Length: 110
Ligand code: 5GP
Ligand code: ZN
Image (tube, rainbow, N blue to C red; front, side, top):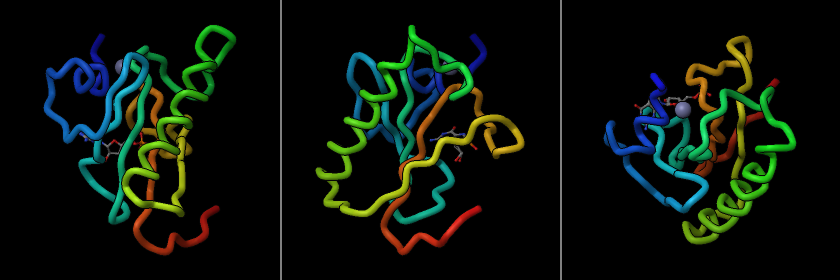
């Protein structure tokens, strides 16, 4: 599978890892858009939120639980979770991932 995030999860490409368990992997974004900017990805490869189904939906809830745990540990009370789905929404890596942004006042978006 020629997937950047699968290679990061496998350790074939280095990353600044924040957390890992049997289901997901969290690491800091290489081009941060906020003072805190990390990504959480399922270890199972699927491309985007458009591919969530009965087989893989549980990992999304797990990822939100991990985000709640990690932000607490980092002392973050306000944060934004972003999931870009599809190229017109800004998705550039087609392994589903959740951006977690914090550490400044985040402006509105549309
Ligand atoms: P997307 O635009 O698909 O929602 O988000 C992809 C994110 O992956 C971007 O924020 C980008 O900076 C990040 N990214 C791309 N390549 C790498 C990499 O090799 N390492 C890390 N840590 N982040 C990456
Ligand atoms: Zn992948």
